[in-house]
Amino acid sequence: MKVLVVGGGGREHAIVWKVKQSPLVNKIYCAPGNAGIAEDAECVDIAASDSNKLLKFAIKEKIDLTIVGPEAPLVNGLVDLFEENGMTAFGPSQRAAELEGSKAFCKYIMNRYDIPTADYRVFDDYETARSFLGRHNGPIVVKADGLAAGKGVIVCQNRRQSLSALHQIMKDRAFGEAGDKVLVEEMLVGDEVSVMALSDGEHFVTLSPSQDHKRIFDNDQGPNTGGMGAYAPTPHISDETMQYIEKAIIAPTIKGMALEDRPFRGVLYAGLMMTKEGPKVLEYNVRCGDPETQVILPMAESDLVEAIMAARDGALDKMAWKNRSGAAVCVVLASGGYPGPYQKGKKIHGLDHQWDDGVFVFHAGTKRQGKDIVTDGGRVLGVTALDASIPQAIDKVYKAIKWIAFDGAYYRKDIAVRALR
Ligand code: AMP
Ligand code: GLY
Image (tube, rainbow, N blue to C red; front, side, top):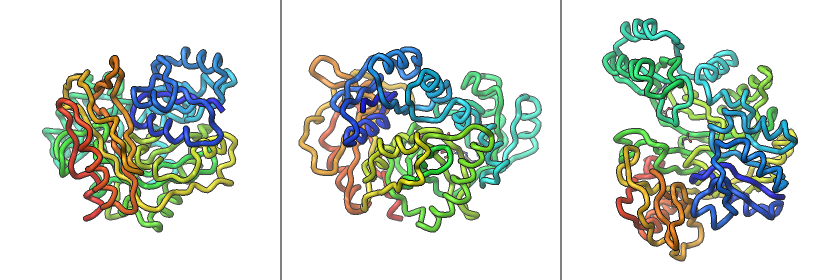
């Protein structure tokens, strides 16, 4: 098979790395990819947002399977465009991707199909929202309805903060059109975990549960980022809890989407809060998590391409997803200043180190400049270590990361430490 992976971050590098191990595959392209992906696949200079160029390329190269990494092309209908033109692309249709594209739609599905989530209200009018928030002075969460690159959620401690968040979203239009509507949500408290399921629209398999680290500084301090590290599996989810999550959350969502005539084929990512009353959904994403994928795929024994083809054929009930024993930890190496402004073009040293078995360096924001590889984004690399246990994987990953250096490099020192508490 010839496979095309769309995207160019750490998640896509992990996908390319895993696809490369499949005996079903003999050629991998990635659009646009990055300097690390270029070692494992042929990168083509087409942006993930350029649907028409991607389609033309796929037709010309007779691509058998296109795997879409990021949410924006899915929400914009890339998979529909490919399928209308007789090409196989894996990911939800535009109508199914609305689960991530609109938080109001996501809440509608959860309410209609009795999926545990925070209580909420939707407002499309600033004054009505303001008067609602004015009557409430406790902690509350204010969210822009649409896609806001992971930044449209503001967790507020009191009325002053919530009114300011509302103003930012609906008046200052900080997230553009994503702020046409706002959701106001009850604040949930607990440990956050990520559960991803691969679905064919009817059946599904769940991947290893994992935990992201969203804040920039150790001990979960500072602003939210795209994710500073992850580990899997997480001890916050026992086998019993996982069964409950499958039964009470994933299954009714897949079933509900089919009943709504929006069958969900792709990776359904549930962001969950483990509250005192049990797991509740914070949000759905319609693609693999980043950086969760950088630990989930190294943990997987199963062939990703075989699973995706089974999903395409509606045959996931005949497939078991197998994980390795042990644990994986990924630490993100970021540019100094991220998630605020940062510089690019810093030469990265140490990438040619002879890594121990079970160490993988996934590239996110990198590019080649002459004979050097330089930084080209906020999150630069995701260093993953696979070992027999979480403490061993932590030890291995932090030993490995010391070999890599660039001007201003920053990483958290406490990834996966929560798992030990
Ligand atoms: P999202 O972009 O929807 O994943 O939200 C970003 C982050 O905001 C989540 O990972 C949570 O940490 C936090 N968050 C979202 N909704 C809630 C909620 N209802 N209660 C508490 N925290 C929340
Ligand atoms: N790790 C969070 C996300 O992928 O949205």
